[in-house]
Image (cartoon, rainbow, N blue to C red; front, top):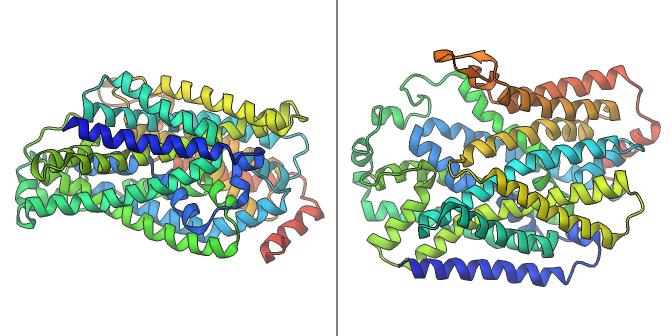
Length: 512
């Protein structure tokens, strides 16, 4: 049976590598490599944006949290859905127009530098460094998720599995660039949706709808099944607090600061395609998040007699049990497992590319060596892809790495550093360079300090961070600290020029 699963995985990875090699031939300059020549169609842009967004978190982290802790974890999905909708409605169109108007910017750091007329490239340097730091953690989460998938399927050693998964992602990103990433993400987005819709339906059909609740009761819950299924009760059976709800909903704030998602808006061909992308993306994310939550609950019932060593493997174990034991179609099971691999790869490739663009286009070409030609920029970018992959590989080396934990930290850091800055750059003309710099630095540092500096004595005298002690998600705090400092510093420092005001008004009116 394993050979059929491996065959499906090998075919899938072979197709991804083929796309990467073919796309490499279309990369004639840095604009093609980083932004695909701003020529993405509606379907590709929508599925690429959402596939690169959700990662292995969608099919491993979220179902695993609900499987282990109950439906109270669904507030994260609700927050993400709201954030997605608002991002497409309020950010996508205006950001696309502004990046064209502001010097045809190819990256987020370049956009910020051009938007605020940052001649010394201070914003470019800050944003490039922030991106690399937090994308290292984010990429590590994808590598860890891929390794766990291979281990679960093949009993391969975790570290060997980590090397295989990281290697495939590295190769097609290294050569294919943005176009390869978007084309593979389109395929991966479709595969993710098919897998996430089909598997719980088949599981319920095999198990029988009448057995769902009895099986949940028999699954060894620490609380009553009614508490487990109650979105307003926590895993201890107590009413979920306002802090817990707000902290989970706060995940949605991260969307307006995710460079790997925002860059898709910048690359869409025209306003007509943007409108199409908006509808497709919103439907896709609603279905995928809703069903990911359902998988956690159905998995609890379906795997009633299966002991999971890691709750984040619930979707993997469901596929294995359905297609290896009950229905016994291992090749189809392998294809569905490719849906999980697709979720992992679609985010990791985007993270590698955005990190490389930050270093090559923004840090090297924009700040350190301002006369680099296009070919040299692409060379530096490819070297950066390899370097980031290696460091992320090291971070993910621990087999006990939590996909949910790594994603949570990276999402908070990027969302707090870039979200308020992007938002204010698009909607408040008084925002200036000093305010933008203060916002990025304060947002990123707040997340790091909130999550990692342990100085508060908790139970048993164990030192805790502020985040652990209060239960407040660092993104929520970092976002509003950044927003506050952007406003205060902008008001306290020099007003923006008439040229910047005119550009802002032109973008607002659609005159690009």
